[in-house]
Image (cartoon, rainbow, N blue to C red; front, side):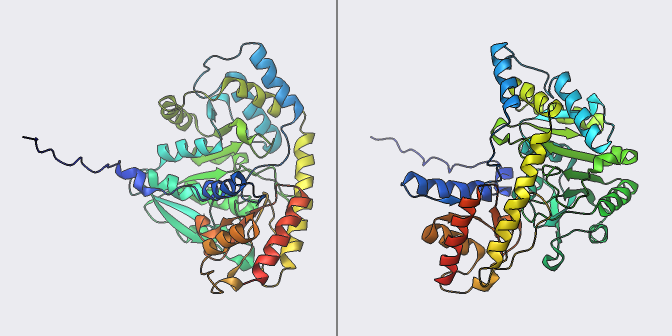
Length: 400
């Protein structure tokens, strides 16, 4: 007689993984890659990735590290040499005055942010997050058990966030305020005065300010600023930096945090149970980037300004497309609401999907950034590719 067996239990994962969604930018890039694998030439304007190659002196440092057998574990938060280079570079550029024990290196800026938010945010804590936001902020906060309080910025004001806008959302449960200037995806820049005021009133109330300064060297307003320069408020500031955009080192995966030593120590404890140290040879390359010649940073910045002006002019020439002038980073965030409701295009996601399917131009839909009437376009590519993308957008919208 055949024994009766019970059906296997349904596969069930931990509750916390259900709080987050796949990265919208990664998903869009994957869809573009599927077409490329079919032999279709795609204009990929999704990636937040410089089209420049990593400067030679940085590559040389990594090669020397390999040849010198610098391939063993290092301290979890990075070598003393790297942490010193981080604080020295930041101090030279922004007058911040951090010490070695107030710096930590991690596997990319996203890893730094993830660790910091896991350490700072507990269940039920409120986190003020300006909209549009970088896709991972909301999910990282939710994974920690926090609640995002969304600050709606005004497109007519170039998505700029002010201190008054932030202050209106503070409650007794506010634990953290996230600033991202220049912003991904809008390119908006928050004034130094407003950033200073946010840090001041946050410190008075015992609230942390997390400043994502991944694009701090791509500020086109002429007023480059880091909240890390506000030394009197260091005990409530966490600065996240990255080498990815500044030195065209996205794939190298090296980010850093600057914060009070106790927070750095807590992050190192978490990191020690996950990834341990950043790659040893990448640390040597990072030292070369931070301590070496900085002309490459200015050269890339100048090229991005030219590309920004070109893409904005091209988008504004397409009937129905509205596009603000970004003040930093390397994205434009055009409003495509004029096309919603036409044909099968009901949402920004429909627009982005149709644009990819029909014109083979890949963008990222605004829903991933908290808005419903935009797409994000990265202009970190050649002018020729931007022109191909613009022509594809023009043809697609004219067919709706």
